[in-house]
Each structure stands twice: as C-alpha cells, then as structure tokens.
Image (tube, rainbow, N blue to C red; front, top):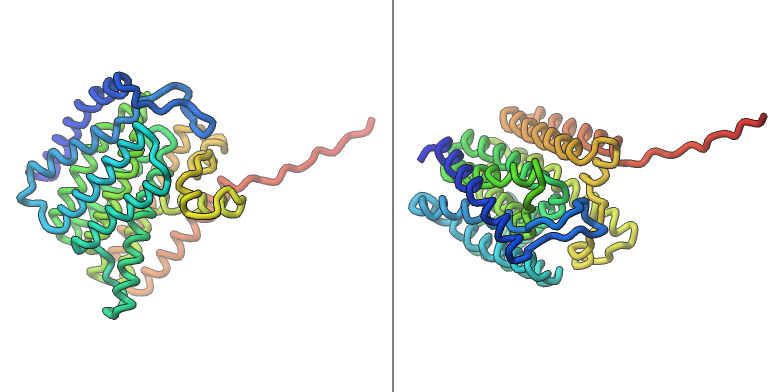
Length: 346
C-alpha cells in the first residue's frame, strides 16, 4: 500500500466512523460540559479520540507484517494510555494516576528499545538518556493535552507535526516510520472537520494524550541525526508550539503559586494557555488556531532548512528561529501597560 493510498483510506474510515462516536457520546453521556475553564457553551461528545485510535490501529494491524520491532511496543504502550484516557473521559481519574500510567507506558517503550542515544556510552550517559526519554514522552503527552483547548487546535497541530516528521522520514529513508505517520495523519484528518468546523465532537483525554504520546514516541524511534548531531534539534522545532505552551504555562502557574508540584500542574485547569491568550488579542478563537497553524508550519519548514544546511549555518538558523519565535509570541501575549488618561480641566 503506497503512502497516498494509506492517507486516503485512513482518512475515509475515520471520516465515516466519527459520526458514530458523536452519536455514542450523546447516547452514553460521555460529554464535556461547559465550565469556567472551558470556552465552549454546549455539552459536547468526548469520543473523537476513539475514532482516530481505532482507524489508526485498523491499518497498523492490517499491515502488521511490515510494522514490527520497537513499533509494537509503541502501539502497546499507546493503547494503555488511550484506554486510561477513555476511562478518564467517562469518570475522571486523578492527576497522580494519570502520571503513573504515562510513566508505565513510557517504560514499556523504553524497554522495547526506543530511547535517546546521543550521550556518551557510559553508565551515567545511559541513565541520562533514559531520563531524558521519560521527560520527553511524558512532557509531549501532557503538552498535547494542554493544547486541546480550541476547536481543531490539537488535531490540526498534530497533523502538521506528523506531516513534517513524515517528510523527514522520507528524506532519511525510513519507509516504515513514514507509513505509520501517514496513517496517523489520515486518521486525525478524518476527525478534523467534525471538530474544527462545527465543534460537534472533541478529542477527549483519550485522543489528545494518545496523539501526543504517539508522535513523541515516533520522534524517539526515528533517526534524525544521520548528517549532524545538531539535527537532533529538528523534533524540538517541529514540536515548538506545544513545548512552548507547556513551558510557559508551567512557569506562569508556578510563579503565580497556582501549582507547587507536578501533580498540581497536571490537575490545574485554567484559561492561561498560549492559545487562550492569543484568542484574547483580537484574533478570536479561529484566528488564534490559524495563527498557531502558521507558526507550526514555519517551524517545520525551518526544520527542513536545518536538515539541508551544514556547519555553522545550523547554529545561525537555530538562533534566528528561536529569537524570532520568542519575540513574535511575546509581542502578542504579554499584556501592554495601560496609560491613564489625563483629566482635562475646563
């Protein structure tokens, strides 16, 4: 099955299945109700992630003879994370339990042989690689969960991220990785119109956490530094938006004393995310989503430029991207000081 056929077929199946899970969400009251920390005004089914997950796994099982080895550990651990997220959508699970399940899933993938391998081959280097892999997997998983706050945002960014990872996989001759990413894109794209256009269904924790974890795991499995160790920055560039949102929101909540530890951070819900603040600048909700799409595409394109460049040019590109990114974002979301109007005496 070629990549275009896989993309079309996975999109079609997901697109056909999603209305079923809209109906099931209403039938069994698996709904996200409006709250102070939410932006929607009507109850909405939370089973969008089920449609994506089942479509993805259908094609992975269909071609299971091609997708073997460490990928199977990713799919198994991802399935555990998905099921726990679905339970959380039906009956809320504590932040501590969610974190423990994420650590369990990450442990399975690392046991299967997927972990960073760029540090010196020493005991401390090996421990550091495993620790960084845990941090990466758990961090990106929760970053996508954070990102799921506006219609079409998490799924759209996930599709964009998967596209650029797929391009890199093709450029570096990793056909299995490219195939898995294409199926991921198609499965997510089939759900996307129902979420973005009318907000008829949400990803739910099962969908957003699974999407983040799967993409993070594929980034670990992929080989990105075939030309230069600097190319290890490429996955960070591609995930630039969710990483920025997670880091910025975490820092703000700690400084404002809204959270004092990791459990508090995972449990806290609020409208203080990057996309919330963007939507309040005058862009509106859809404008904020489109703006984030543009940033994600620009970061992906710069990642491509980084992969194609060599030597000192790599460092210049990284510095330029970082500077432009933070200047642009800061100018949009940092509140401007209000000047008091002078009273005019008559």
